[in-house]
Length: 336
Image 1 (cartoon, rainbow, N blue to C red):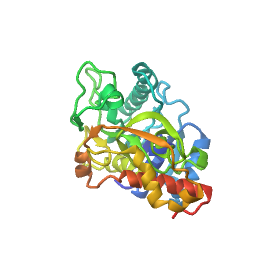
Image 2 (tube, one colour):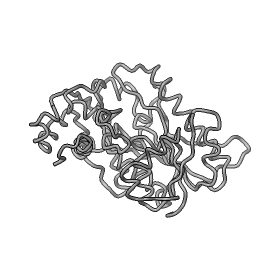
Image 3 (cartoon, rainbow, N blue to C red):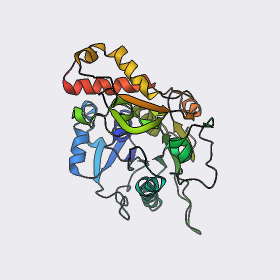
Image 4 (cartoon, helix red, strand yellow):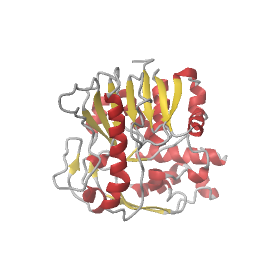
C-alpha cells in the first residue's frame, strides 16, 4: 500500500487538499489533477505540504477542463488507485430541481463517467474512491423542503419516481467486454465545515458550505435558507477516502459521512460555540457573532461508517473551532 501511486482529482478544494495531505502522511505517492500550474503551486504552498516536504512523492497533471471528452485518459496512466473528488458546488436558497439537475448532477455524472472510462482503458488500477453525496440517498424535497421522521442510512434507496440525485457509481462494462480490474467505493458526505489551507485571504474563509456555519459568526446570514442538520469535518472525509483504499474495506459499497448522529447539527449553535471558546475575539469585535442561521431537521445515521472505519467523526463544535482558528490566524489575532 505505502508508496503506491494515487491520482487525486479536485485536490485544490476543501476536501481535496485534506485528502492530499492525508495520503502523503500515510506514505502514498500522489499525482494531483489540477486545472493550472498556478493551482499546483498553491497546493505546494500549503503549510502541511511544506512540512511534509514530499519531493517527488507529490506530482501534478494539468487537466484544464474536467468535463472534456477523455479528460483523464493521460492522468490515470501508471496509477494504482484513483480518488475522484472533483465536482461542482452550488449554494443558495430557492435552488430548483431543474437547476439542481443541470448545474450539479449532469456535470458530476460527466466527470465521474470520464474518470471511470479512463480507468477502464488503463491496466493496473485496483480501486476507485468517488466522492458522492448524502443526497444520493435522500430525496430532494425531504432534504431541502420538508421535515420527515425517516432515518436515512446508507441502505436507504430513493423510491421511484424522484428528483434525480447523484446516485453512487456502479460501473457496468459494455456488453461482451471484460470486467474492470478495479472496484469502487463511494463516500457520501454532508455539508463540509472545517479549515481549508488553500484559503489564505480571511475574506474568503466563509466560502461554500462553510458559510452555513460561519456566516453567522461574522454577523451575517449564509444565504442557504433552512439548512439540513448534517455536517462533517473535511479531515474526516479525507481520512475515509484514504483508508477506503485498504483491502480490508470491502469494495463496491457506499459509506455516509455525517457527524453528530441522528440529532445532527444545529447550525445556530455556532454562536454559543464561539462565545464559549473565543470570548476575547468576540469581546474585541473581531468576531461579531450575532448573525443568523436556521436548521432543518434531517435524520441521518452514518454509524455503520464509523464502525467499519473504526473512528468517530469530529463534532460540529470541532468543525466550527477549526474554521475560527484559521480565520483568527489569517487575521494575525490570538487563536486562544
